[in-house]
Each structure stands twice: as structure tokens, then as C-alpha cells.
Length: 194
Image (cartoon, rainbow, N blue to C red; front, side, top):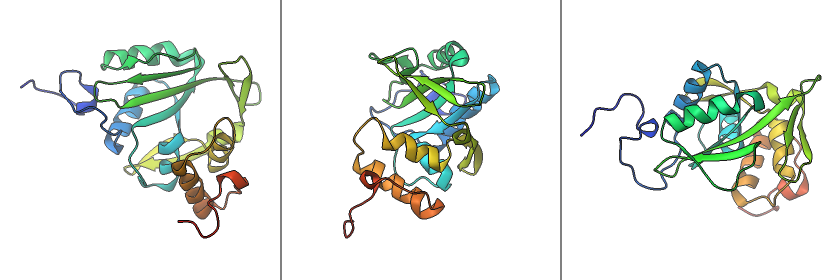
């Protein structure tokens, strides 16, 4: 059996089951790896919500991160070096890497304009604007401070682009309960539902 230094999810020498979840220690190790490489990222999606809440509320197969366009080649090289493989169907500003266990890193690359807004180029060529204030979110994963989108930015991202799933609505309800953010009607649980 090979000797492995560091978390098992980073090592391509460890055999794993398919469809393992991206657990808190894996998220922290990924963020430390990127921080050591001077790549600044912000958590988005499910782990972004859980970081804001300071607790893992559900299992996550992936971690969504926002990074600068200028850091994407370096980020890609680091992930490849840790056994991650780019998945088909991505764009220059949105791509997914997966390891042999099925855990995924979903990258959204932005450029920052003169006002600090994150400009994300969508597949159809339109620009989606992350408001500058949205990059001020602070959270924790396993008691480790992390950068993440603010609660308001999380709601904005979940309110547009795709029909919300049950877990999206539950995530948004948790943010509303903790931070008092306003939710559009389609992100609210129906009264009386569980």
C-alpha cells in the first residue's frame, strides 16, 4: 500500500469509491493549496452557503469557487497535478474538474471591473455581474476562516439562470433565517411545506 502525505482526495495513488462527497477537510485542503499558490478564490454554491452558516448542512459532491480569469491556467495546472481531470462541456470562464472518486471543483472565472464588480462571461457571450459587495462574504469551514460570496450575492446567484432545486430552496431558507435576506417568491418554501 503506498504511503500518502496529505488528504486522500488530493492523491491519485489512493483508490477510492466513486461518488464520494467533498467533505469539509477536502474543501479546507483545496483552499489552502490555492492560497499557497496565491490564487484568491471565493466559495459559492452549497459550500458557500454552509461556510456562511459555519456548519455543513448537507453532503456536497462538489465545491463551487469563483477565481480571477488571470489565475485560471495556474489553477488548472494545480488541479491536474493533484489528479483532477477537466470534464467535457466547459467554457473558458466555467469549467469543472473531477477526481477519480467523482468529487468536483466547479470554477467560475471573473474579471474585476474598475468598481470591483466580478464580470463573468456566460456561455452565450453575455456578461453576468457579481456585485462588488458580494465578494465581502466571510465564513468558516471546519472553523477555518474562508472567503465566500455574501448572503445577498448567494440569493442573487440562485435567483437567476436555472430552476431552483429543493436543496437550493432549503439553502436559501437557511440564509433567510440566519441573515434576514429577502428571497424572491420562487426561492421560498411554500407555506406549510416541510
